[in-house]
Amino acid sequence: MKILITKDGRKYLKEDINVSLNEGNIKKVKLGKNKTHSGKIVYAINPSFTDLTRFMKRGPAIVRNKDIGLIITETGINKNSLAVDAGAGTGYLAAYLANICKKVVTYENRKEFFKIASNNFKFLKLKNIKIKQKDIYKGISEKNLDLITLDLMEPWKVLKYAPKSLKLGGFLVCYLPTINQVDKLIKNIKEQFMLVKTSELIERKWETNNMIRPESRMIGHTGFLVFVRKVG
Ligand SMILES: C[S@@+](CC[C@H](N)C(=O)[O-])C[C@H]1O[C@@H](n2cnc3c(N)ncnc32)[C@H](O)[C@@H]1O
Image (cartoon, protein in one colour):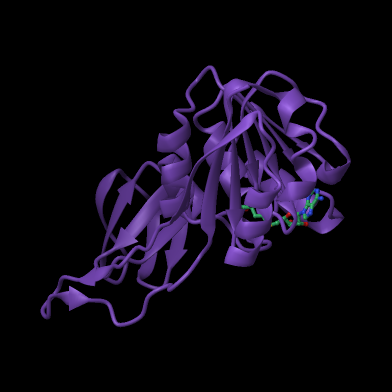
């Protein structure tokens, strides 16, 4: 498989032989510069993990890269880390966690999203991720965790299970679209947890071709990130 990139930045994920594109056909793709039968230039590279995530089948709304970046840097997860995530949804956040951690278990209670996320993990060839078709509000069986990430409506319902599952110093990170949910979550945090911070990240892309300026359209809001740490 190769990522094929056209001059105007369009990306395709394709097998290496008998490729058919809007720009024309290529018999055998080689790394670097290729010419289609109609004379258009297309560049081929080996796909990175991030290239592949762009071709995941989408289910519900995903956690955006900018927000995943902060989760990774704030919690310091690494190749020895164990993480639990819920709900899996598309499996986007869980996949990025698995790309860094030793092991990730993700919970999804809806059959259709369980299927989408499972297929996405297969597509990404992730061997260190397990998906459970379970309601995380009913409990977490994993122990000694470095991280729990929650992207669901009522994360406060998980607070009673988190202390037994997280190791001392471990993080609970909740991704919430509304500040009402943030308020409710924070009011329910118990003494053995410390609120580290609540953040909102805003990414503004720029046009850099002729007129250099911010793009006129942007995603105004994704979600708030609440970082909580087990300290007692
Ligand atoms: C917004 S999506 C998560 C997207 C995911 N973080 C990603 O980046 O792809 C929320 C998911 O949580 C699931 N969910 C909601 N409540 C749940 C629960 N109690 N236990 C497990 N999954 C749950 C929903 O079915 C939905 O698929």
